[in-house]
Amino acid sequence: MSLILCRQEPVTSPYFIEELGIHIYSSQELCYVIYNHPLLVMEDFVDVGLAEFLRSELRMPFLAERIEKWLDGRGASDELLFLILQECAYYSPQEQARYRQAVTNLRKISVDEYAKRRADYHYSLGLYGRAISMYEKILDAGKEKHLSGEFKSRIWNNIAACYTKLFCFQKAMYAYDCAWNEKSEKAYLKRMYFLTLMEPELEMKDRYKELIEKEDTCAWDVEAQGSMDEAANSSEVIRLQQLFEKDPIKRISGAGEIINDWKYQYRKMI
Image 1 (cartoon, rainbow, N blue to C red):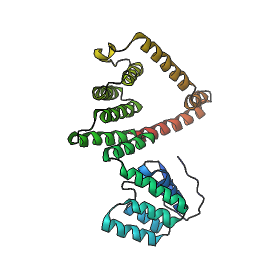
Image 2: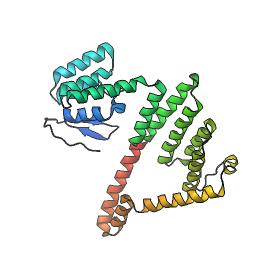
Image 3: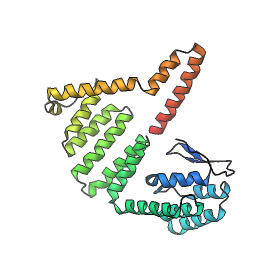
Image 4: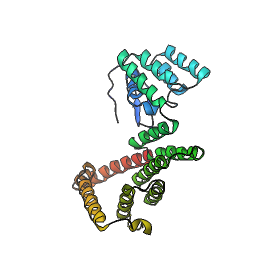
């Protein structure tokens, strides 16, 4: 992800936002992140480190001081997000009002559903390891709240999706098993079947095999083959094919760049 710098501010040490993998160089970019990623910034985003960035790099000492005083007296608050948007004056008053309403609406939903939406958002950013931790905290906290089976099933399904993205197929199978135990949905059988295609050493439990019809597996095999064909024509595969057509020196150099990119992406995921 990248942002376009429009407002020229003499930043020498940009502020790094780990979840997005970007450095921000202006108050405009800061506002853009706050405005477009509410589920990312509503918890502990505004802190002393950000206040120092506002003071030393963005030359906004009065705003930094107000934030620090607020944090000392009342702790983190959505009001700090509104304050930054107001003081930086990048978004119009009407846009700021819409943002305030969106944040207010998020605060009105149940604690568990809000936590799930935040975890879902981290999943959407490719932060699968962090999302798993957030989902597990929901389940742990829910042991005393008697969460509904349907809700816990959705959580386990999402945990399984995270483990699949991390190529931890055994853990994904276990999570789908837990999802099924909370609510028996045929979609889970399909996803478990796909796991066995990705990892042939995996076995579905006999009780699940008995529930799958021959026409189901035929249809799922066709779908899986379609996905593999689509993957074979993806930009990343084409990039690799083009790399191997180059001379040895360029091939080694290009391979190093790709491997480093893969390492960075995987470290981010876990």
